[in-house]
Amino acid sequence: MSRFRVARTVPLAPAEAWRRLTDWPAHGRQVPLTRTTVLTSGPSRAGTRFTARTGLGPLGFDDPMEVVRWEPPHADRPGLCRLEKYGRLVRGWAEIEVAPEAGGTRVVWTEDLAVRGLPRVFDGVLARAGRVVFGRALDALLGVDPEGGR
Image (cartoon, rainbow, N blue to C red):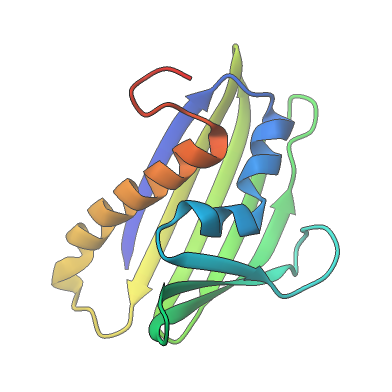
C-alpha cells in the first residue's frame, strides 16, 4: 500500500474547514475528470457511502467509499473522519483531521492506497502523485492560494 499525507494550516474556523472537507460532491469538482455521487440520504455521518467516478466517458473506474468514523470538531476538540475504500480497483483508507490552531485550523489528509494490479515498486510514484492531486484538491476546497496567500 502507498501512504501519503498532505497538511495545511488555514485561517478558517475548524467547523468551516470540516464543512468544506466533508462536502463529498465538492471533491469531485476539484479532482480532474472526477464526479462524486453520494449514495445515502441525510447529512454525512458514519455509514455515509459515496462513489468517486474518475474517467472520460466509458473509460474510467469507480472508487466507492464509506465513512466509518465521524467525529466533527467541537469547541477545542479536533475532528476526525475516516473513509474506507472498497472498490475493485482502488482499496485502502483516508483520514481527514481538523484541529484548532492559533489563528485558524490545521488540516491533515492521510491516505493509504492500493491499486489492483499495480506492483509495489510503484508505491513511491503513487504516493507522490497522491500528494500532488490531493494537495491541489485540498487547497481548492479550503480556498488556499498555492502561491502562499489566501
